[in-house]
Length: 170
Ligand code: FES
Image (cartoon, rainbow, N blue to C red; front, side, top):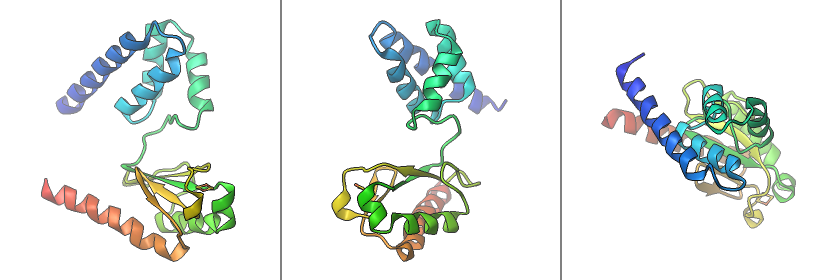
C-alpha cells in the first residue's frame, strides 16, 4: 500500500479509537459511534464495522443490521458531492420526478449510485422542510429550489468546474 494512504488510514483508525472511547459507556452509543465513524471514513466499509464490533464486543450482525437499515449510513464510498433530490409530497407534486430523471440522465447514474469519477452520489430524500421552494434538491449543504429539469446541467456544471479548478490549483 502507498505509504501516504497507509498513514492516512492509521490516522483515521486512531480517530475511530477516540470516538469509541468517548461514547462507549453512554446509552444509545452505537448509532452515535457509527455516525461519527462515517464522518471520519466517508462511509462505513465492512472493515470498519468489524473493528467497531470487536472493540465493543457487539455482534457484527447487529452492527451491520443497523448500518443496512438506516439510510443515513452508507457501505459504499460516497462522491465528493452528494445530491439529494427531495421526493416528499410537495416536491413530487411540483415535478421532482422529472428533476430526478434529468440528473440521472445527465450523470448516467441511478439513485444510490456514484459517478465513475467519484464526484457525485445521487440520493432520493424525504421532505427537508423547504416545501415552499419545491421542487428542491440539495448538493452537500447547498439548497436549490423551484427547479425545472432544464436547470440541472448548469447546476452540475458549476460543481464540475469548481472541482477542476481545485485540481489545477494544486
Ligand atoms: S416536500 Fe420537498 S422540501 Fe418538503
